[in-house]
Image (cartoon, rainbow, N blue to C red):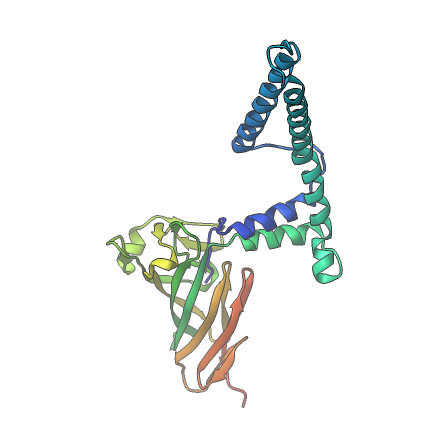
Length: 307
């Protein structure tokens, strides 16, 4: 079973880091300005132009009509020079300053620099908005014909949005076709009456997304996840059944941040053993207290006990 999630910007500090990191990959001195930046430069340029025109006007103003013309010219020239310097400093000096700082930020923190690919990955991770918590996977195993094992898996978790605005999220479920899966249930509970719940018959009638010839994914419906500051609960539940060899395994793959997980074996045939690749074991329950980052996974195995 695999999970997928979208990433999006959430906090100003992440945007700052984004600028610092991306500056190290700049290969050209050409600077792209946003609409807001263009408006700022237009405003500055207009102010400088007004000062220039006022200066020229004062130069030709008869001194006998305005005894303070000389002082006014000095002030106007000073403002004009300050405006020109502000334009140059803000556009060029600050840009090169950020570039120089970003080149050494990792060296200052770690004592050494990092490859651009690593910096890019860190930048993407800092933009994460959706995370999961209270992840629980329950396994029930029973013997089937033809030396096969029937494995029922039930997964549940809560979804949290750490940003300041609602984010769209579709709970994912992907299974290997090689394991002869049967989808049993799929639900996403959200506030404001937009929840949905599908049983086995519903899932058989729904369109399914095939990522490849070997992987089958449920085409779930996306819902808005409110910011966690609102205190609302968004919970996903899903279950499926596998028909696999009696000495086999399943993988719980994480492609979004998950704040800890629990794996439980509810039923196990006599003469078989059950093992999980990570976590603290307590009977038939494994608890993973650490953060599970994207691209990490947990392997669950079942096999005959050694004689």
